Length: 540
Ligand code: NOJ
Image (cartoon, rainbow, N blue to C red):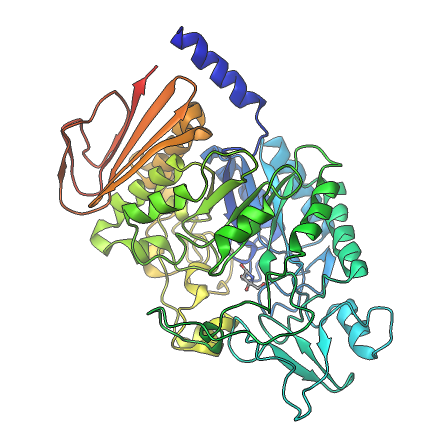
């Protein structure tokens, strides 16, 4: 076999792949990225101004978390108008300017879509709650009380407390899987489906390149409103009533894939659209597979494998990769180590002394996983979780469950751009504190230091892009031996071995082979010191 020709063919094949296959995606939490108008809250013009920072990383796309009109009870995941930009963030012209600039810089633009629920201030809900026979009466999930006045079922909300709230106007309960101010849309209703698909078309026509679809497994409930059974003990702490149940009936209805088929028919009308679903819960893998099945559903899905893990263990990585073998009809996974809901990974996975090395290790590992890699803003700087005192908490989930639930605020702190008083984030005190540790990790300081994590992140992204096996190849092998993790990726004739020492004791290397593509934290063919990694090409 002519290996070089084969490799060329492989590179050509990778150029023919859809842009999103193997993509690296940068998630922006708009409140926290850059405040251009000096109100302490990030905004769309701020994002646009800082797009070059993202483009210089070499990522393929940005995903912008919700910026739609919202009373901000759940910071934008409670939408009151899907087709408008919230004035805190700017206006539609600002959004168009953001898209135009991103495209100029070669970045695709993904936006969040929240279809499982709206805000209680959405006009649809106002109309729906106004009577039992208005045209939108059935757009939300309404139900009569039980004969004793109690809620229609035992369902519990993710954020704590019953998932039903009484509404005096209709004299009925309505369902909400999160806050009471986030009523559940009834997507069994065809008109409600048409309405959210109309929203999707609106943004597609505005030029977006795809969507991250929020909490998609909550999209439909059991119309018979059967009680959820109790969950067997699994050793995990139960901090909310939600944790005591198997989520058999409040979510995950078998009609969700048919709704997804409608989404796919719509996105297929446009070129190169990428869709990725957020799917949490105990049955996430089965549901992600259903939601991404074949060519008629979404392109990708991600769950919470790494987002809430206390430790990064080799077995977790291999088990996660094994969920997505390279098989026909099976979807393409996406992975994130951090996001706006989970504590920053460096605060979960290593000690403060280990952070510099571990940050390189985890960045490189993310680039070696088969699937799309999602980087959360500030991850390229090594930001850590900021401890927000109760008096400064903003996150409704943390406030409701304090002190048992870790605040999501600590991972939503302002991006530190430079050493000025407001860290270059804006011109006034930001909505959350920057955090002392994170003040020392600014973009400006890391730009000036060739050995910084920021520079390393660019190299790791470039390495993945330059090697088809890492970018979109299959996983030929994944081995977990103590702290050692070995992943072998393969595309055509290219075979790349990725070895990581996830522990703090050195690991001798008896079978390390191949040309070194990258070695970090002192790794060599002979040894992997603490948190070291070596990527080698073992054929070609
Ligand atoms: C998932 C989002 O990521 C989270 O931030 C939000 O609170 C819930 N969905 C409810 O929309």
